[in-house]
Length: 328
Image (cartoon, rainbow, N blue to C red):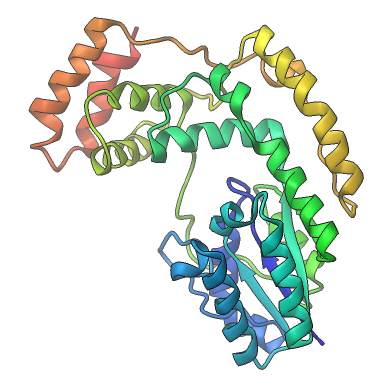
């Protein structure tokens, strides 16, 4: 019976690094009995090996998996794509269809989840929402509406009810991250990225706040280009990537989230579980300081006069940010 491993992240849990490592070790994995079909590595940010409409439509996902599994000559097939997380959250029918596909093809599905502390993921997802999706709310507002805890619980409940076994490994920023994944799946060889890191670090919180202000005057690719210029040029501006919440909001979050985390832990197969949130996870860091009207006008003028017409902005951005925005 074939074993099919579907790694779905979740988001901001090292998925890009893991997918790069898998893609760059396709041959090595295959020699040890594990297939990572359609996987690529190298100097390219990717979203794994579930591609095209398969990460947007449940029907396309099931058909994609069916074809890839039937074509694979290996008894162990690995898929990874955090994007499909959005397809299966709250959708028990997808889990049921995976179970039915397993019976049809005589294979066993496993759902692979990365365990990263919720305190860290809240910070990282918030920055990502601003950087790539134009999110304009404060950290307090985000904490009040975040679905991270309920989403994770829904995935576990649907997996259990459909008979799909869950495997876990822990997030880390060193090679133990890869060895933990290998161990969880029983892969008899090591894997690690062969190319330099694609993303060296996350946006600092003050850089994220600059992007929030920019949202008033530009959209789409302009904002993304500015964001990456800031990433590459301003790593020494501020040492923190921590967002501070008010005590009132933090206490509300702890009251709502910790019972859900306890329920999640009771349903995880082990050995990995989540730590409960603490007030100290939220009471230090960078305060959200709204930009003044004068600062916003300065951003608007710079964007209109400099940014749109100037393509070689990388060396210029950092000096301008120091003078006009970050030196309050």
